[in-house]
Length: 396
Image (cartoon, rainbow, N blue to C red; front, side, top):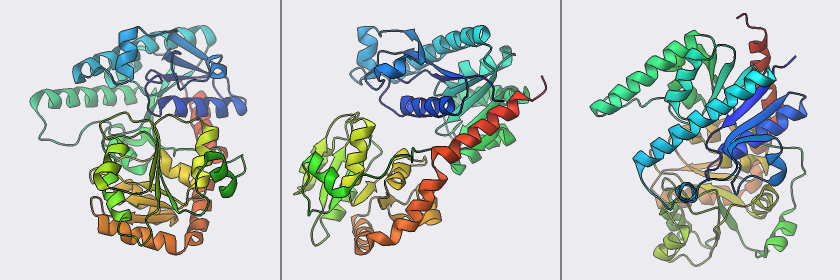
């Protein structure tokens, strides 16, 4: 029997992946008969559908106007960001513990949230157990950081060590690289559970998708999908495309949330064929863009060290991938042979990789299919259930 689970997503109202990850896991847990609910800081969010709000408890129904401006990126400031993130975490912690005590929930699964309040809570909240989904480094490994950063890192490491010794804290990491970083402190309490995708729906037809999106039927299309962050290197990709005999249509789909606006890069490169869709698109529209594309491009800068949900989504829709040769991304491509890598910042390397992909798109189908199966929710949710069920019988 599975324990009752509360998914806690303090930063679900930001234009990142916190809410989409939370909503997908909530849906799958409930589909498998698990008693699960979600706690968020506010349900006043463009990414949250009305029907999803029925399964969600929010600290606030609506954000103050100035706070909402910060969420949308209209107010800057690193110190302010840190303060607000801590406040959101503390508020969700307060609500989640109250809900757990009233409902008998045994697991609080955190998808986002700042470290210090959360790991400190593990030491004093003895009835519930904590899962923390870790999407980046647990602590920085650069020993040359300033004194204040070293002290903060030491404090986080001390808290993690104390928290994992209680047996009430486990880390879930989407990639082995993230797990390795966390395991330096958390040891066997860090686990790999990969990003998951819904494979229950049939794949859309390319011609139908292009017609619905008013995209040219006979054009090669390279899809750049996802929010436009500073770490994405569109210049290298577009300059590489210009080296091809017939440059493809560059299709950018996702909200611009930084100064890295693809429209400016297209103009700077003088790229002749591009379309920019500057908005968050719902799943039913996103699948049309993937179906319409020939290749999905993930051009990150050299120091990129995380995974990518778009990488897995490309496998979901069986589209070969052109990706920067960053550590995790290269390992994924090497394991599944579902695309090609190129050297970050090197347009010639991009062009050579693009030629290899375009020369035989069908050659990547077996690897894409295998990756799709390995990352399906039917496979991945069983790993979450095993973790939850294992904890349900752990002696107090």
